[in-house]
Length: 303
Image (cartoon, rainbow, N blue to C red):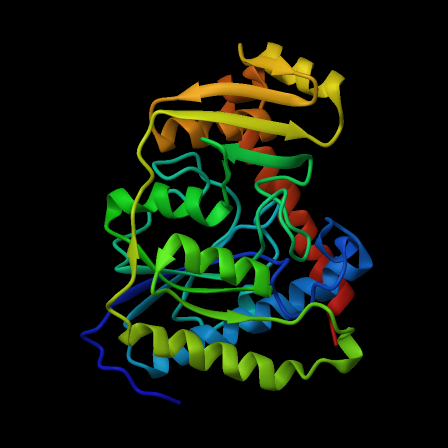
């Protein structure tokens, strides 16, 4: 394992997703409460555990892990070094979904996926209900949205893992970022998960020495086009709900900056005006639902 001086980074934030993890090989494995999902959750937890262990061995002082798939309760904390802080569920702000980044120095994205409308394993942006998402005529990835929301806190992405298409997109967005791909074309039976996981941890550790990463927050104004997979009726319904325009399956809106654009996308994908108004209650219920799901994972994967 490569050793890195502890002065490089004191505190690493990990944003974790399931589609690019070692145990997710189908859409069913990403869906809440399926048999495949319970296995994928345990594998995802072990992926993160390997990276966390390597970071502490590299003398990083603090590691925060944000579970960022569906309900946000996919990772089993008992499988991860107790020195790490696991943030489960969703928090309203100041960073949408993440809350307070907690003084982290840099961010790693582990297990993410490619953008809606592109090639890649289970490619989507925010939700699979979106067939394609464009910003000023180009597709936008979750990495770009998340990195932009964290940029005001001085966090630069230094590491990214996911399928090869997702890694290529990450390199096009963040200059000199370290990436590590997972081959999703092979079945689980032909995949050496232990070797892959060890290499993932080593690559993540090596990224601590990378001081050349550069991410530039996109500057507005923006014209967004959100193409809904569910068809024209849904696009019309959602656009009317939020005072936007629609054309066929497309929802169209303008935003002055990336943060406003991200919030509008969150509204389209996850909210209604009533849910947004009572966001405290809504988040509590969502997080309760997620906790119940994680209990189910423990039950199904218990040795």
